[in-house]
Length: 391
Length: 79
Image (cartoon, rainbow over all chains, first blue to last red; front, side, top):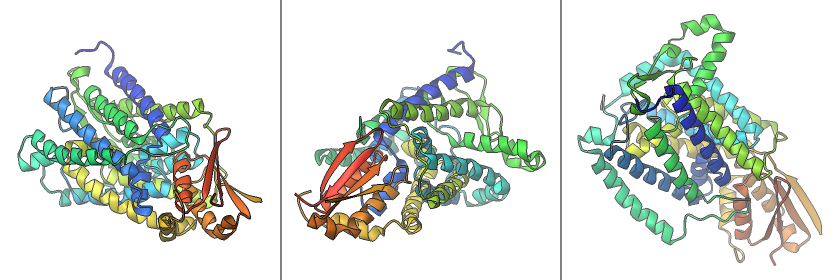
């Protein structure tokens, strides 16, 4: 054991610091994953997607370098499973949910930190949705089992039976060429008038470093939704103790791995409302993201509680949150786990999740425009294209 | 010249942009004649980029002013 402090103290401190930094970065750059995918379809805006590709590619290189230098305790990291139909379905529902809620599971946190009451509503929705999943977990788990293919294999490299470096290189080389082309066309830079704006490509690089630091030190990349489920379980145990006892979902302990930095005792955890390793990592991360964003907004004088918005938008935020909570468990992990962790190691489930989420973001965008009744997307798309004067 | 103020602070992303586009579109003739200008009050950092960009693409003059924790975007007739 390299450290003399209790594992939970170490994991919690690292996660809190990473969360604070991530929250600050996310707020300054308004690095909204939900917005990037939504606007790609709704407004044909690609500038943020370029930074997303940069984020995944740089994370991929950093994870692979960490693996080759023996810095990772577990590879692939825990709580990733063989691909199944659930990844696509979960991704699709999460895509719709995040667009309706105006932010994904992590976007909701940083927007909440800056005072968005709609995001607080979405947050409550996510907790409720996570708890709702427990009601049909046995049936869904059976469906996952039935639709799993390449059983026991997590990454594309494992499926193909090759070294991970080979699959990573075959993705990184063409993607790097694409990134260079975008860089030459200055397609990463945005013009905005937001105070102390952090360009999204800088945010992407910082988030790749944060995610890699988490994998090396904590043993897992960034994740938050298991703890949302714990909060739901905790509330359910208080409000409906008899019913809670019947739910098998909360009894599971899917996390079980050894982090070399914290000693030989395995780190274990599950969705149940206990302060286990999952909570020790995720709760400080969640608090950190909210506080980091609040700090960034506060320093700019932009921390304001804004709640006077059309009532319909509260309904949208709540229903989007519920969908995200449900989808995070069905997928069976959230978009941050898949996109910032699984995709960079080319986990087959995360690739399927991405396809599902793209479909969900497209469909969610259509739905949102209809429900908001704030102007038709095709018309606004046309407006953007009608260049009548000097831009 | 009349200034039509529209407060869309705190709204769900991307309602801020959609509302702004809808308002600009509905009053395009008025704006082009120079009879009125639109002032959007927003607190969405992303929209400080997207609203001016869209309005400029439609040929309007745009100014963005930072206020006390929020932003005021004015859209008026082309220069």
